[in-house]
Image (cartoon, rainbow, N blue to C red):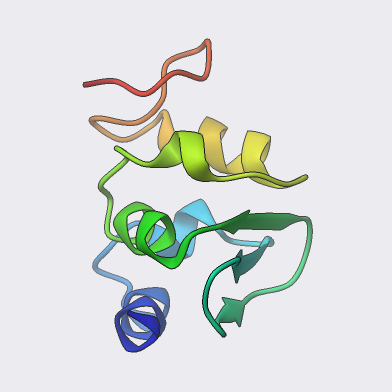
Length: 88
């Protein structure tokens, strides 16, 4: 999964680069991290889903950068609502 996360991080086709711009992203269950800034921490699977534009695991992400990332995700179909819950 760390290889997938790294590929998604570098791939500008997927929204991950925009969602996490200026943020530090860290997998809590794998040896993977990227970026700089306020931290977003979560399971590698939740990070890969989010990096690829699948927002079904946003509730698993924590840290000082989550509010910024959720605000950005709300601009995409299936992102978060104004109240921070996941659209399904």
